[in-house]
Amino acid sequence: MRSKADVAIVGAGPAGLLLDHLLHREGLSVVVLEAKTRRYLETSPHRIRAGVMEWGTREILVQVGLGEGLLQNGYEHQGIYLAHAGELRRIDFPSLAEGWRIWVYGQQYLVRDMIARFLEEGGEILFEHEVIGLENLASAPRVRYRTPEGREAELEATFVVGADGSHGRMRAFIPGLSLKERVYPFAWLGILAEAPPAADELIYASHPRGFALFSMRSKTLARNYLQVSPEENLEEWPEERIWEELNLRLEGVAQVQPGPLLEKSLTPHRAFVAEPMQYGRLFLIGDAAHVVPPTGAKGMNLAVADAVALFQAFWAFFKTGDEAKLSRHTETCLEHVWQGEYFSYWMTHLLHTHPDPFREGLRQAEIKQVLASEPLQRFLATNYTGHHTTGRWVGTLA
Ligand SMILES: Cc1cc2nc3c(=O)[nH]c(=O)nc-3n(C[C@H](O)[C@H](O)[C@H](O)COP(=O)(O)OP(=O)(O)OC[C@H]3O[C@@H](n4cnc5c(N)ncnc54)[C@H](O)[C@@H]3O)c2cc1C
Image (cartoon, rainbow, N blue to C red):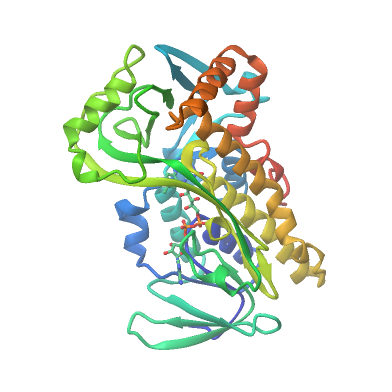
C-alpha cells in the first residue's frame, strides 16, 4: 500500500465512501481505512440500518454515477401514512413538496455498491485496518493504524477525514470540541422479517401503547419498529409478542402478517452535534460529528450532505489552493445538520407516546393539528423529502 495520500479517510460508511468516490473520480489519491471486514459491512445484521433516502440523496448519487444498484433495486415512494386514533392519513409528497419524493433502498446495499465501484476503479480501501492515532494535524498529518496482523504502521496525508461514525474516536483529536446532546426517553425495538410489508408505503403509527413504524426493504422484507423504553430487555420480546404488539398498534387501520425474523435490535434515541467539525487538517463528516434519532430518517442523508460539502471544499483547495471553503467546513455543514436535527426532534416528539402526561397531552393536540392542517403537512413533506438538507446540494456537483 501507499505510505502517502492526498486524503486519508477513516471509516467506510456512507459518508466516507461517497467522499472517497467524489475525490477519486477527480484523480486525487485517497486511502480509506476501515476497522471491520468487507464481509461484515456488507452482510452483518448490525449494519442493516437506514432505508429511506431523501430525494436529494437519490439525485446526488445518480448524478455522480452511483445510481445503478439503487435505480434497479430500490423503490420510489410518493408519500407516507400517518395513523392516529384509528384514522389513516396519507401525506402526498409530490403535491406538498414541489414534486419531491423519497427513495427506499437499504444503506447496506448502498455501501456494497459503493465499495464494489470504488475497488473496480482502482481505489484503495484497507479493510480490518483500525486507526489508532493521529499526529501532526496542524501541518502534515500522520495516521497511525493497526494492520490485520496486529502490526502498527503510519500513513502521511495532506488531509484526514474522520468518517468513523457515532462511536468513532477521531473527534477526540479536535481540541476544545463540545457536544450539544439530547437523550430522548424513547427507544426502538426493530425487526427485519421475511414478511410482506404492512402497506405499499411507510406507516408512522401514533398509538396510546406507543409509536410503531411499518417500513420495508423490499416487497418480501418488512422492517418494523416498536417504541419501547430505552431500558427494555429484548429477551422479554419473543417473536409472537412482537407481532401481536405490532398489530395492536395498527388496530383499525391495517394488519401485518408474521414471518421469520432475520434480525432484532434495540436502538435508544439520542442526538448530538459536535462543534467544531474540524481542526487543522482534520475534518469530520457524518455520524462522527452528529447523530439524530431515527424517526425522521435523516442520519444517512446528513452524512451524504456533509460528504458533498467537504468534497467541494477539498476540490477548491486542490484545484486553486483556495482554503476559504475548508476554513468554513463547520459553519457550512451545521446549516443542514441543525435543519436535520430540528426535523428529527419535531417528528420524534410528534409521534412517540410521552411518559410525562403533560407532554403527552400537548402531543395529542399537535398530531390532531398536523392531520387537519395542510401547511403543517407541507412542512412535514418538504423536510422529510430533504429540501433543507441534501436539497441544498442537489445540482452543485458538475
Ligand atoms: C436502526 C437504525 C435505523 C436508521 N434508519 C435511517 C434511515 O431510514 N435513514 C437515514 O438517513 N438514516 C438512518 N439511520 C442512520 C444511519 O444509519 C447513519 O446516520 C449512517 O450510517 C451514518 O453514516 P457514516 O458513514 O457517518 O457512519 P457509519 O455508517 O457508522 O460508518 C462509520 C465507519 O467507520 C468505521 N470505523 C469506526 N472507527 C474506526 C477506526 N478507528 N478505524 C477505522 N474505521 C473505523 C466503522 O466500522 C464504520 O464502518 C439509521 C440508524 C440506525 C441505527
